[in-house]
Length: 337
Image 1 (cartoon, one colour):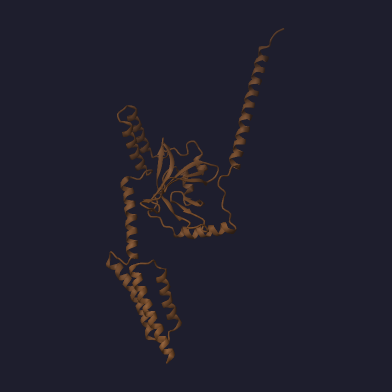
Image 2 (cartoon, rainbow, N blue to C red):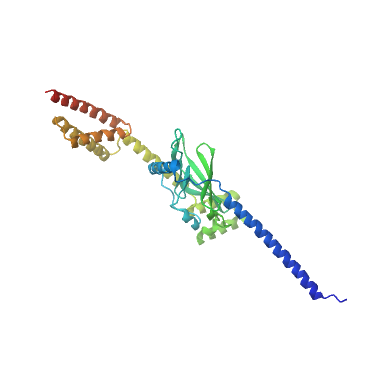
């Protein structure tokens, strides 16, 4: 009996094909299962738009409009596909606006809820040629510190805040899932650089390989390169931002306390007081006061009550109350006559 070599080769080829097909089907099956598990797994629920949650959303929006950043955010930098996150915000107790700021909005029905800015976008944290986290600094005051946040970008099938932790006092970490971080090369630094900076990086790598520079020297040069690219803020830029914020806050505090740095500011405040005095003089002169004048006086009193307590405002308040008392006494006298 003759053995047909061609038939044997054909049978072996068929068996090999079956194995390959089985392996591919097996791999595809578990890939699909894995995908289904990822879709079904939901860590953070989206807030409802009805009932109490709707009330909280409206409150949060109002509170957010009142929040002010101590410093302006840095310009956009990093992988270009992340520009899709610019001018968007993601919220659930914490509100993240990538490349702008991150804030906290606690439920208004809790005792003493905190609502404030935890950090303003400044620069990237980079490790092993990879954008790891967005660094947000210069948040609201926290004792002797200012709050800060690191936002770690993780691969996820939708944009969502997963969790927030506080490793040290007023220094926060946030995990943010986004599909823009899923591609293996999505967060690499080197491809985002200009040709000039790429060449500079390659020269630095070459000098390290040839032992012309130490690891410390390599890191120092790479840090300077990332500053040129706009991924890091220089120490000078950080100090400038911080000093400008402090200067702005000190100026505001002086104004609230009735202290002025310029003659122009003092003149403006004088004009306001003069207008109030003129209105009150009209009230004192006329025993019968028309409703418009009364409304004007009442409005000034309300504005004064709403303003923060300060030396200047407290003096005006006392003066207005004295004049109001005189006015009421005069009205009573005319009524009796």
